[in-house]
Image (cartoon, rainbow, N blue to C red; front, side, top):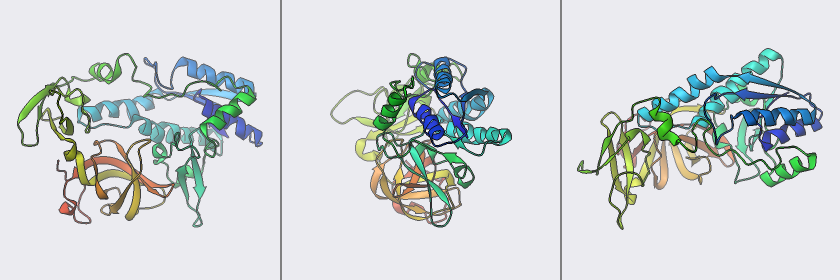
Length: 364
């Protein structure tokens, strides 16, 4: 079995558990980002930690250089999304294209029957023979949201050994085994965005950042921003607005017109949310679901209205905050992932979209 070892404690314990269960284990670390990194999971020290844990476990360890794939599937779309006024999920793109598609492809070529990772989630088999990603045992560390991209082909070959353990249990086992990563802090940020430069420095080196105007919902100018590409729907600070008792929030970003529309908190609430690029765990779904709109956000109740298989409109049970276009919207049945896609627009009046209508129609 091929184990993706990031150099962190979770993947280290995943490898140890599989070895203890009698599997023939080989560790692999993917070299993805070759630029500056001070807060993510792609540094030279991470590769070194993974290699040393492999030595401790007495298993083989390899490094796969997927840098070109990472640039094509993660970095370039990240920049393009910001230029278009969207807020992307680069870690989900990495999971889709690198940590599973590309790694599973390489595993097949090398003769491995499965790929394991240290994600805090579970793969569950259903009575009809299909599989789904399900929430992990530790609610605070659950990563099912970022694994919604896995389909049946991938789920048949993916193993998540730490998904039924809490993070403290994982660290305790790592300490018991004497693994060097037992107390290593978790990676928190996007690996190619440094804590010193942030998004502004990264994007500014790759695209021209556009100053823009800030308007209210009636179109009246109320301020300016240095870069519309850095504004996210729901954002409050950094909009060049005067302070006060009634703060304004970004309601929409029109990158082509270099315009940010703002309004009070009440205007963040909408009745429905459009989603495109939808993928399914085991087939399209309509009807009542739970919906998660961020990695650790609280599930929201809604109903999926059908259209094309790769599009859905989520009608909220009661008005909910807008989801920034580009963010992942993931559908659940209880603790199990049904599928998910990309937020494209929000709807103020639930009746604006008839079933089957394109979710590309948008309205502030």
